[in-house]
Length: 351
Image (cartoon, rainbow, N blue to C red; front, side, top):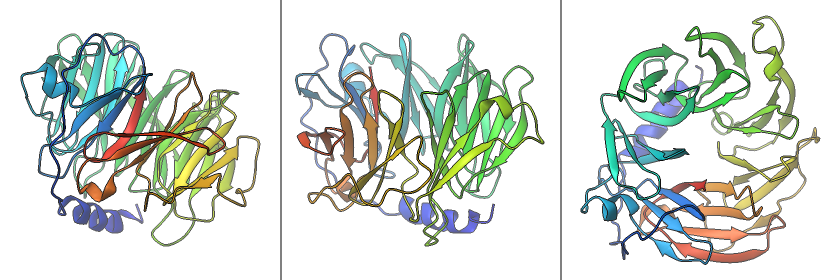
C-alpha cells in the first residue's frame, strides 16, 4: 500500500485534465467482426466520447461500433477495457461505473451492468463473470461476481488497493492490485482470497508463457526505476507458505503496466515512452537496448500482439488532443502500417 498516496494524486490529476477532441468519421458497421483487431478508445475524462474501433485484415477502419449499432448512443466516460467471450463482448466503462454487454458480432446492446464502482477489467470463468473494481482511491479494491444469466452482481470479494487486471488460470483467479505491490489469488469455488503474493510495485497485466507459468508486469514505484517482470508458479497458489515467485527480471526503469507476449509464448514485449523492449522468458537480466524507438510518438499508450500473425500493435493517444493512432510492426520492429482510430486508444482485442 506504500504507493497509494502517489497513485491517488496521479490518477486524480489525470482524471481532471481533459482535451478537445475531433469528430470521428464514422462508417456503419457491416457484417460480423470475426477477424481483425478491435481497439478500445477510452476517450477524454468526463466527455463520454469513449468508443470501440475495428481494423480489418485489409486495413479498413470502422469507427464507433457501439454508437453505429445503437442509434448513436454514447458508450460512456473512460472506456477502460473490453473482453470477448463467445457471442458477447463485455465493455468496461470506468468513470460511468458500468459495464456494457453487447453482441460481439454486431455490437448491438444487450444489457448494462450498473452500480459497480470504478470498474477496470473483466473475465469469465466456469459460467460466471468477474469484474475488478477500484471502488475508490482510499478503499480496498474488490472483484464483483456476476450472474451472467440474470445480469446481476451476486457478491464481491475484497482484494487489495487498486484491483486492476484479472486472469483465470488453472482453476484460480489472479488479480493485480495496482496501488500496491501485491497479487491476490482467488479460489472461485470458495469465493475468497486464498493467497496474497508480493511482487513489484504497481502490478498490471498478466501473461501466460509456453510452460503455463504466469507473468505479471510491474510498473515500479514513483521515480524509483524499479519496474519488473515477475514469473509466478500457479502450482504454488494453494499453499500460503510456499514461495510462488520463480524469478524476477528487474527492468531498471519505470515502465508501463501493460505488456504482450508473442505467438510462441516465449518472448514478452513491454514499453517505456516511445521505446519497445523484449525479454525472453528464459532471460534473467534486463535487455541492454530497445527493439526499436518510434520517432513519431512521444509515448506509447497500449500494446498488443496478434496471436495468429505475430504482428505487434502499439497505440498512441496523442495526448488525447484528437483521434489516436494504432501502429503495426513486425516483432523485429519494422514499421508496417498505421491507422487513425478514436480518442485515447489504450488496448487491443484480437478476434
